[in-house]
Image (cartoon, rainbow, N blue to C red):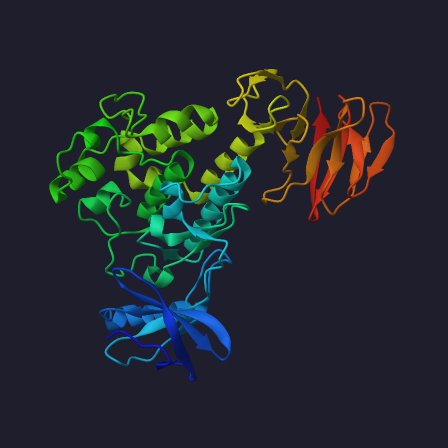
Length: 421
């Protein structure tokens, strides 16, 4: 039964929520804007109420709370009435867009920085979900709202989240299910990790990792073909050993154009995750924190091109990079070393020292074009010169980009040691 404006629903904890209007609908139910004690919230109301086990799990998820702030988590469960039930959650902020809008080019990231931040936030969210003992079970492009300016991510549709080993009855969405689930297996954290790899690939390359020439030649995507292309005969479009499913020009232009733009460490990770071995052996799939580390390392290789002012990735194993935009050569011989990491330094490039998405420094230049590092963090830095002198760089202060300087960073109370080469 559908709800109408001004109709009220009762909550299991007491109190009511009043329906204001419909916000949207999908296969499982309708989402309404509701008023709860003077505060605007969203109510998901099911078309056909799932079984009692689902209802009890929903109540359990509410009582235990969200694994992290990345989740638009169920806050209240309604009583069973009007032939169904639902749950209350926070509203999506207006500046966030559905992931599907990025795939359809209705929304675009402001920068590579924002895109990488979104990938790390997604990895963080599912790392925390699995640490809490949950599996998502229905991970797909409809589960995310993303801020294209900041890269912040909100994960929605968390009513299907179940404790590891239990089943919600939801198998997942075609094209995002792991091959073993396509073949009839049960979702778990390993199948979540496969779906995560698919979503990260689509985030960066805006095409599906298994949809190339073989899928393009399919006359009609029937259930039999779905089981073949996404299950028993799945093939990565950039598999170095299998070439019959390469992206097709005119159809998969995003993948063709974007694959060369990203650093080798990121591409190698996808080649590994979509190898025949890893797709068939779930336990070999990459855990979320390792995915996040790879994205962080890719970010370390991103600079601002001094010629065109655009973001570009460079190979830090050499002293000269090439901009993917203007194709001009870039001197990347000056670099900051931090705990084994290599951060190439060019004017306007931001420096990320710890694990979050907030830049801790930025490269500037003086009137003579000499490069400087500005401390944009909230903490003081300690700089030691080759002669042993110690200088303090306050927040918003500057220091020269000069070989031999050793820097003691303290970021949010965590110490890091760096050196300029």
